Length: 122
Image 1 (tube, rainbow, N blue to C red):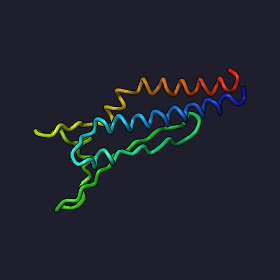
Image 2: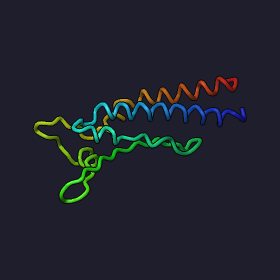
Image 3: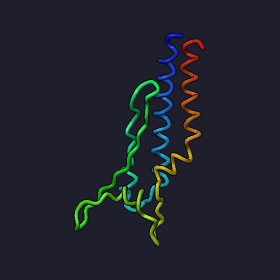
């Protein structure tokens, strides 16, 4: 009984890592592909925290140099751009990949928690 919270935490962390890796892969697949800079700039930042205070983070950065200075292309595409006439641009590619997969990822976390609890004799 005493080891159950730690076992559940280990399982949750492993499940979150798996979900984060899949989130990155899904976001890369739907992010616009022009020069590839945007897709290469999607980073799984890792799982932070312990116990019930864990979070998985992902980010996207694609800095372009222009005559007027540095421009965060990733922010523009994700938050501001409505799409171009001759280039298909998937606005909110991080959010859309998360929304489409959140139920699957929750199952993964739950399954990893169950595995760890079984290892502890539950």
